[in-house]
Image (cartoon, rainbow over all chains, first blue to last red; front, top):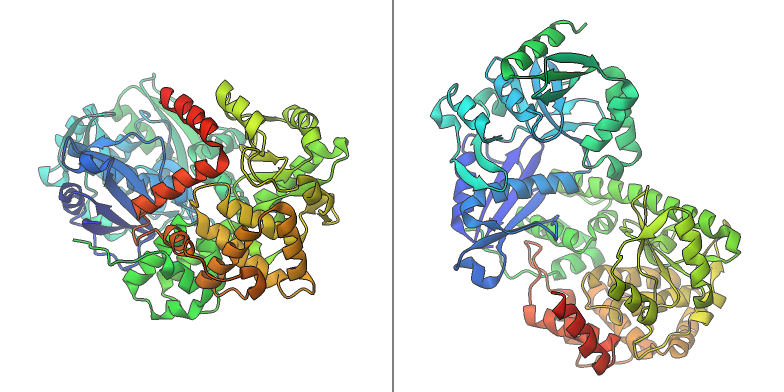
Length: 287
Length: 342
């Protein structure tokens, strides 16, 4: 491909090729604080290709391809090339990952123990992980929590946090401008802006830690804390996993161990301050 | 700039046939090799071939994961075969497995690292209605509820429209022969079924020569050679395992004649010999023909980024695949219907 770069996040290295320079430059800028790849052989190849040959120059549109490709994926505008690259990397993980059990979840660590937050889009798991990271927690990832079937630990995958709409303003008010990527307006999911994890999170991106608490947050409801039964949690986590079935027995064992050993609860919250107070309360109550 | 040297899938075929070739690769060579292997669905097959060789740690990890993943896939595939056996048991038919699941159930070398997608089975055409009803009763359902496609499959194809299991999300392809009914070549489906070999647990496979015949039919006559390297690798593995068995080659010649696929088998042997150094019967392989080079170009049309290359060659094979499948008037009608529906 004409332009390319390589980025390493935690245990995974991505090779990104593009028909255009702009998306590669944007990726390099967003990942400028990440150390250079330890291995020159990537785990995944991502390709940003002109949807049709003419689309390289005229109203350029980006087809998201790679080792794993969704045939029905809609080509994106070149103006959103960075989001295309991020989506393509997510797609490789979601469809291709076989070493770790992948949970669609955010994770943060404190005192050597990990809090996992999982929920649908809009539950606030990304924003909560960003807020907790600004209050002394180590950010481990906002998209995928990687569970190591061999150890049961959570492996960091600290990608830049993809903030959406109102969350952008909230975080911009709290953190220096240098921590933010370019604002990408009017995407399919509204406005998107990436928040680059802090140096400590990046420096520790190869250090896994054991899970200590799993929460199912839900935004927009009156404040509430509920216990979640083990079997209900198991089923909900299989749904939150992109590769549970593909991993077979290893996936079942990893998820069963996680659910068995780790306390699980659901929190409903009307605003982020309430959520943070609830997290503090539950975290303090851990044995 | 990340310019790609003029690399094609020969990097993969060379390494598969001579694994020590990999020890000469640098990081970029490994990256291309693994990307091409992935695109051709041969990473786990490659992993088995490279076992015991010293490879870079990252490549070793990728290969080990691919192997483990193929092993999980094998378990799933065999379970799916067992589910079909239970669903169809009451009909009293032998459950004849085809392709990947057959290799796995029979414990053949071709199954090592072989990714298995759908479950492919072969049943007598007279029994299609009963088989369909039994599968629908056991939780399988239609994938394509499109009337044109459905009617097309039933009238002209060698298999039922694909069914998917509602709970397990796995597809089954119920074949009644190994080539579309519209193809010019008409393999003898009754002979395939009559020659099937029991595996001892209620499952059957085709006889070794018929297994080869099906692999060849699958490679050439039924498609545009997309993913063809994987099919050719099946052929190499099958020949290496069965080729030394007494009488294999005379039987293969006899079956190739019976099914009308002699030129196809010959060409498959030549391509396999050329790309994988397969030891083939010189009489059956016959001598190189001009077209071979186009097939080779098509099979190897993949660059180090995993992209398909050689657009014109691919297009030619795509058109050819339809040409082989349908008489001209029917092809025109089919393309007209497909075009009108966008």
